[in-house]
Image (tube, rainbow, N blue to C red):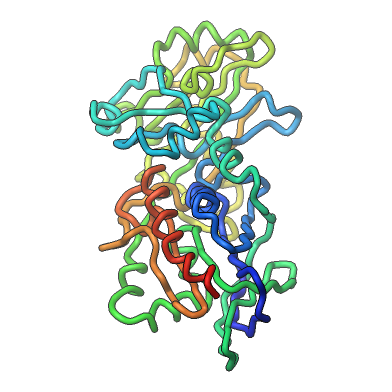
Length: 378
């Protein structure tokens, strides 16, 4: 995390805005600010090695040919005519999903929804949207509010390396529970008035484990024999796994002789909570991740004996999502909440709506952007 303190800002021709988080909300916010053409300099911080957040794509260390979407799997929307979809389709970032999805998923089965996949991996969404952005890999440490008498206050943001950086405004797009852990943000919410702080504290996310399993190339025939690109697993079929995707098939990618198929496995929330998915990494029991990976590999072998059970595993990656999908969104949330007006501090993201998904992040980005024109007039 990071430290934020109010500090006097020298008058400048262009205001400076910090966006914390290079996931979907942060990326869509950057796009919207470009569309508005505001007189604001924007810097984006993210603690990850790459952009994407919960829409990240994992790749093997030795090459970029083997990859897997460990978070967001596909996009379901009720508004495919929106300009952002047109742009992403025209840029060949999104394509209509043609793979079959098996198992029960109400949103997928609802004919009112249109479904898209990112052929190059879900991280390509954020990579495209942020292609001209100033993205810096920085982890912020804590938040301190420090009032300095001045005609123009701003924020002094402290990174984990001890460096400090000055901004006129800050937009936080990381999950709500992480934001409230930052000293100063919770205080700002409490002093905002009303019940905002209580409503933010009530926001909850599901937690789960995600795992990528790559197989030898000769497993392709068995994978195509499954007849689906992804499958939702019922509780009766498995107590631990709720979803399996044949990642390349789901995206509509053509198989190659050099690269074998990759399966993506998501664990169910009840099992995940019983097995440390909500536990901070520093508090994990010794050997937890090795045990989880072994358990999930054994279970996917049982579920797909002719695929995983019959072929060699060439790569396996386990990832913990402590904040996976929004379980209980912000009551009466609009997508973005102003914590302080001057200097401007905004919390935005799907947690400030009532559900997870690309459209919720789009709504949050637009809501946050609506507060920025005032900054451009500073």
